[in-house]
Image (cartoon, rainbow, N blue to C red; front, side):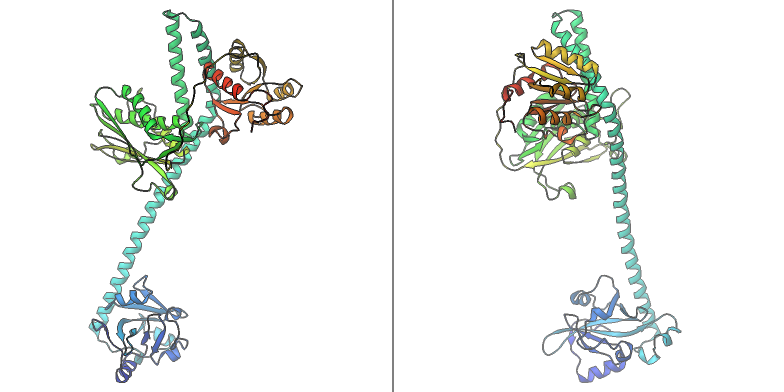
Length: 555
């Protein structure tokens, strides 16, 4: 029915002909207001009159998603299927023709008629054969084919949308399974980390005390060094478990990326060997990362060593820090972040391997050469820092990891830190609270030999009685996870009764986010177990120097 372009508005003679041939015609303007209607609408739908809203009364079923004037006009020559909003079984088929009148205003003219598939529907819809426009068998067949094609096209589009939605749902389900798996392993890791780190603390501490008395060159000293190295390795595995479960203690601060990457480069090069070349680059506008220095180094070091293992014949590893070119996910789209790229030209990974690389204990290495915690700990640390990680890889073309972490724009002031020397005590009174006897006895010995007066307690309740019985203490060193009151709860009650007291919290594992993330008061510190006796003495001297007893300025 199209004239192949924009025609003029029908004159009186043309309108009379249209009324005769198409008693259900409708004319609408650009605002979809009805400007003319066929005579049969008076009985079929009296509300469809001049001035009425076309879209309030008529629904365009085919083509789909076509509701505006220009969209309808763009389908010039197409077959439209319409239905009435109040009578959905009343269908019409026809075409829209674009016309304009003497005033220059555009119009759309629907020319067509009722559409039905069963002859019995005629009387049910109140129709007669005179209500249908002139047609022939060939035209009806063409219209049927066009309508069928329109339906098939809509079905293909619907199928494509459903497939896309199903793929997204499968991806979300896989991510949920990964999160649930990480949480399960995290609970397991947290359950064993506390006791395991207490054991490592005792081994490491007593080994350090023995080394301090072992003469240089003696065979026993070499044996003690091997024990210390083995303990360090075990502690690293425990930290990897906690990192994988996003429970690793963090100290969030503004990081100078050039310094961080330079320090990592210095540490990593000796581990890569002569056949692997490491190249590092920090873009001038990369900014500063809001992260934990040790966690960032652990993330990058694990990725670098993973790249080394993927290049048995040698190759190149590249670390790059830059503003990201694309957003990593919806959750980071509106945030400011820095992108770290760690790439290699190694053997690469297939899709099956790539889908599992962040799973705990998954490894492609030979037995005895890996436990499958490296990349899973990277994933956990990145998530704990509020970032995202992605990977690109294919067999034979190498691998690139993209790590996105929160970023600080501009240059922040760099604090000059003067190392504190682990000087001995001056008779200061220290309240030690530790329910694990091995660790308590070790720390009693370390502190007493360093010149502190130590009062130790097995339980937090006994420690509270000590502190509130008129015996003031200069420092509290307490475990976090204990029966009864936790370390932070104990410190709060002591401060209520005795005033603010410098406090060191220690734990092999803590669910308290304030401790893990370093959100403590200025006179409080957190030390994750295992730590060395010199490390403890350094922190004690730092606190006692900065906050001597009776200093009311502590906030």
